[in-house]
Image (cartoon, rainbow, N blue to C red; front, side):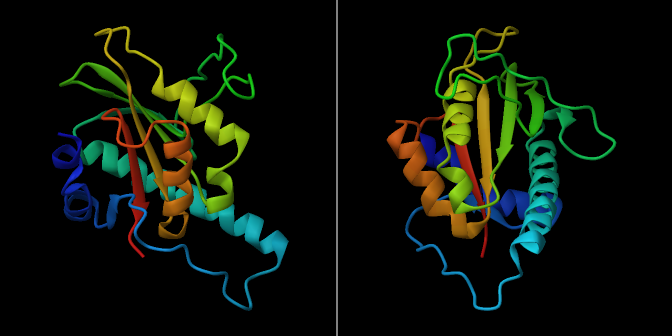
Length: 181
């Protein structure tokens, strides 16, 4: 059952990495922007920092699950392979995950994508990534690859809504994760 498979992930991650994550749920409302937010140019730099932090957390989470991390969009790391969008899904562009690994137990590829905001969860780029990566199968086993998506807590609802619109919410091979607020 999907719920059982995902239960306790936040606790496991917190124990393994010291980082609190939990499967994304839509019960909690997204937070409103706080007055005094940094100017746009600082916000862009802040988003880059958030992206690096979330990517690092996802790498540590993959390792805590026993996945072999083969590449990540982090400094001094091999870059993940680009997935060809041969069937021209969504925006028709090829896509690159933020983290790429392998689950030696299930013998499947594991891809991770990072979204830093609610706005980023609803873009055509993100929708294409979700559709493309969720349809991929592993050559090692001919099984569906796993896809993990990590977002900050305030983006949980937007991610869940996008997954629902794409009929991916609740699929066992698509795992949304959100930082605890």
